[in-house]
Amino acid sequence: MRPAGGPGRRGRRWRRRPAATHHALGRSRGGLTTKIHLACDGRGRPLAVLLTPDQRHDSICARPLLERLRVPRTGQGRPLCRPDQVVADKAYSSRGFRAYLRRRGIACTIPEKNDQQRHRHNRGRQGGRPPVVDRRNYRQRNIVERYFDRLKGFRGIATRYEKTAASYEAAVPLASFLLWARSV
Image (cartoon, rainbow, N blue to C red; front, side, top):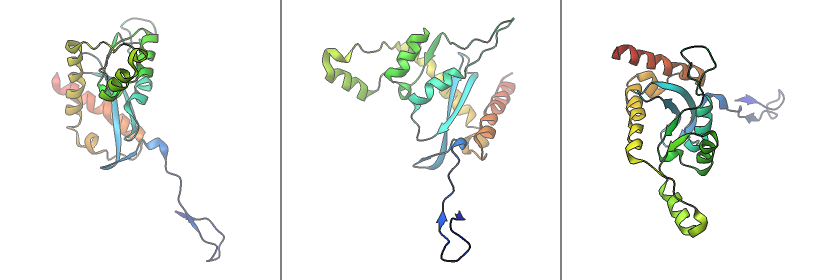
């Protein structure tokens, strides 16, 4: 906080400094927290990381996460940035995200939320068809959940001691490398 008025005692009014929005801190029931969004391959290795404030909805963050995805080729050529398939939980379910995946030709397995099912059902014919969800394919999502469990085993990742989002985001690949080194 800093004084806003002149040097006189009566002229001093305190005004709050604007909060830094680039630290990816968001308010939730537990206090200031950060969400980690991960895109992993079929073996549970992270390919892209995105940090967001806790109150931001997951379906908004899905598209920027996929745009960060870069998989280098073994030979020459530009890196691959379009996965064959996306498996995500209900939090990423939205019409906009499904349309984005359809436009890019990416198959998706994302179950529909209960309220979305209810709204579609209430609209009748105008509600459209329900999205097809392959239950056997949806089980692959547990690979990412298990990776999060191993990642949260690192105290610095679980509690976020870093002040800036850049240093916290850099800690995730470091922890990923340590997890990979343990498994070899």
